[in-house]
Image (cartoon, rainbow, N blue to C red):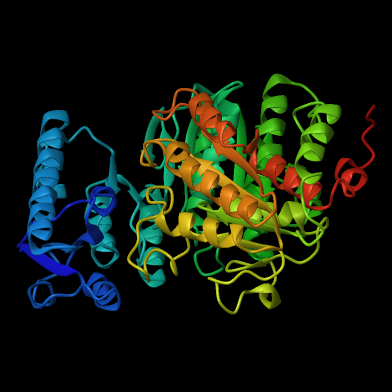
Length: 531
């Protein structure tokens, strides 16, 4: 193998674009590894750990762009380096044709003083500086960047609060403002339901499900740390006020992991004063706290969407365990579990969305018992090694240990690590069900089901060659209007034998039903009557 690199001084490019180009280069014949990154200290360390740091890149500065290729021959390495340059230039041409390009926030403001929101997507070390410039110019900001120190987040949010400006983020993956998707967002129908969410994939699931009903007014992302005690829920409170004051928003949904009691009290008190029907999903939290505040609790993301739709329509929310009839569900499950071997006992969840991973564990904690994870519900269930499963194991492949620390793009964009994990789980004779999420929308992989389907088929073949059957259950988060098209993605998964469910929560229940050989049926459906 041959390593070749080139550095372009002072040539900054967006991280999402660089992730996409890196992925496409990795997929080329004769390429072992490829990285197109800004030459920050963090990225240099990642390249060093991967054995890809050259002297040229080591000497580069944080504002320099580095291309590093490991290929089978010197000639192939040169060809791929040249290909990377072509792709960068083509992306620049497309951007210039689609939109005006400005060197600084100040020059953009001079040219477009009418704009009122700035999306920040730069290395985390510089994000706060750029966000502060935008706030001083009177602009709301969405900080897509991660790696921003907590103290800088607090400073920015307090400044935004003082000026009456939203600070969405840092690490805010999804927002939809007046129908315009920012970051990882789905194409949703405009409507009267507004969302404030401390979770990107949580916002995507709820907004996509609501899009099939009344539709979405706005989705305001807060960033994952907003409800921490030291931050105090500043953005969620401001986002809530924004929706309360918005005449087009009639019903509100709040989404977060359970905040501290102090922060929860502030948020619930404000929501109670809203004068608008409000659904609160503190995923895995105590619903009684929400009920006591006179608001509507939701146990899952799907539950939040269903209840918001019902409230908007003036209807009584229905309990949805499965969308299909119970007879259909039982038949689907039986067709899967009757083919399992006795030693196949465990569910292995391999997730691209951290909130989906957490939600599945919340749904299943009272059904299948302990679930081990790299983001566990209880500290004692944290895996010693995230690369090795233990009994029931659910992994968030989008966690920093798989992305930032390994220098890999997010699994909503790049599937290599997830695909390797799927094949490893298929080789484990104790794996009964592999549980997956597939996320669509702007910013996500252009064909995630198409990319995963061959690996799923290979995983099933591995089990078959060893005399076993591997059940694969998935949910697809998105809409028919997304660039990838919801129906098309579902069909690609079903062609390779995947049981596709309408939501992540339903997929988790189906996985439990299959792994238990139907024994959990009564526990899952509870007191609901069925034929």
